[in-house]
Amino acid sequence: MRAGPARGRRPRPRAALTAGGGPRGVGPSRHRLPLRAFERICSGAATRREVALLREAEHSTRRLKLLAFADAVAALPDGLGPFTDVGAAWAVLADAERRSADVVADVLMHPTVGVWLGRALRQVLGARDDPTPLWSQVGGFHALAASAAVRTGLPCALPVPVLHGAVTLPTVGTFPVRTALPVGHARFALDAGGASVTVAGGREPLVVEPVRRHRLVGGGLVVEVVLDDSDPYREFGAPVPARPLDPAHRLEWAKHLDEAWELLARRHPGAAEELSSVLSSIVPLERSRPVFAASSADAFGCVAMSPKGSALELAEALVHEAQHSKVNALLPLVELERPDGMGYCAPWREDPRPLLGMLHGIYAFTAVVEFWRVERDLVPPSLRGLADYSLALRADQVGRAVARVRGAASLTGPGRLLVASASARLAVCGPVDVGERTSEAVRLTGAAHGVRWRLRHVRPAGDAVVALADAWRAGAPAPPGAVRGRVVPAAAPATARLPVLLKLREVDPDGFARIAAGTPGDPDSALCLGDVGTAVAGYARRIERADGDVEAWGGLGAALDSPALRERPEVVAAVRRALGGRPGGVPGPVELARWFDRRER
Image (cartoon, rainbow, N blue to C red; front, top):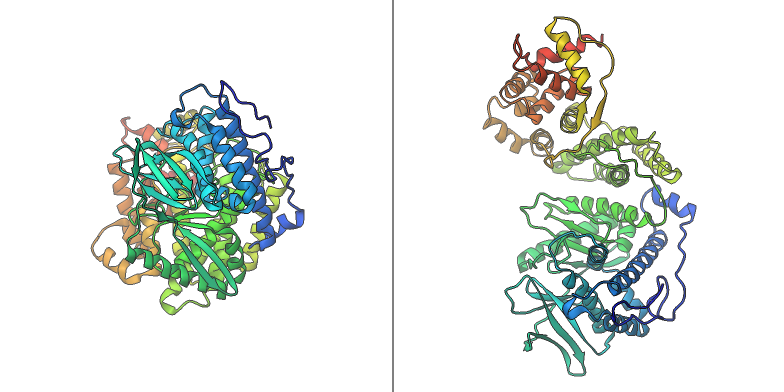
């Protein structure tokens, strides 16, 4: 890759930091994933050997992105302020790598570096993810170089960005500075006298808040994870302020992590071995956040999650998110699908998902099914309801998703292998007798979800809706034939009330009973209690008051034995809307659904 600068900008050294090698100017590495390794990854928990292949490929991908970033910055017009001289930062990074390639690799592979690099590269190429100024985004490269210098003991003096009142050096820590601005810059220096930070000509008293690591030990495995509450890129998006955990919450996280690791090492040794190679960082989210756990394609090995109520739930979340990290690392090596622009119904999401999103979920939730298949026989009686429900729900969801994508023309050979492997793993877990009550909760959850999803995102053909409305007004049977529809993504909440109550009924019967007692006549509670008649009547009343009440339609579709409402709720609802304001009045949702059902017989 060329090293020439543009517009007088200082070049990066020609022999430094190639895509796959060290600072000697060797050519890019070529990464190939052996078929047996891919099959092993598809079949479940990966060994350290397979994860090492993925990690090496991710490392080379980041180096390539860094080269592309530096070349793109060199071609930019002036306007980068204190960060114009990218060549100086590049020289520091190259010198640090000459001292220790392993240390520089560790800095570059830090999850938040991947997030910054992805966003910075997009911005220098013309995209804009957030209001962060371009000069500040480019300054992240100088912070990366300064981190490598500190870690290798290399003297340096570089400008660095200030974000939300702190200079952050990845893998090193944060240096708070006094400023009222969300973005700014400082000068970082490291010499024989130590480190210093200078802001606006004034030297700041150096207070370092080091990156905090927690060591997990068990089953002969040791892994150090960063408990990240300070890096501005830790939440995978625009820079955010630090939110330091207080000592009590930090101890709580450490306790749950230790307990979760002990559980995994003892009961799920394959998953623990995999995590020991994948997991590097955990980002505690605020309790009020709706996100339970998340990962990012740019942040290999990082999991952001809200606090968990138990080590069991934390262990499940770690297993789940590790699968996403593996799939993300696979993508530069293996083409799983060819984007087809279609929106698929993922049983675990309220919004349409691309085919790749379906593959992510199928792979991740298959591991969750295997986790609960083991746990249901080991948990204490107080947690058996949670284990049974989680096992049955996730198995049902994966089965539905596999059925929806198995025949997708856009799947490649490797993609079909991944789906087939998930199906085989699901079969090994086998049908498990969780009891009629839990099975019913899962059935109702799936049925209501399907109705909600189609109502929000499927638009039936207008001419067919008009013909059906005319047939109703004429007193004729519903015309036969399928109604074409198209998926149109629309805003959707993260969840709905009915599935929350159904889960609560299974995992906390007393808590559910208190809620049900306090909401007499509520159709969701009635359906959970098995009072189908009250539930149907309640949902129908809600729809008659507000035809756009998607959750009421979902509950009605789950409660009512109506093929039309389960399979084509968007058509039933559209015809009812078309009949509004016309002579003869608007039929009730149950009456209209029955009319549709008669044409199926």
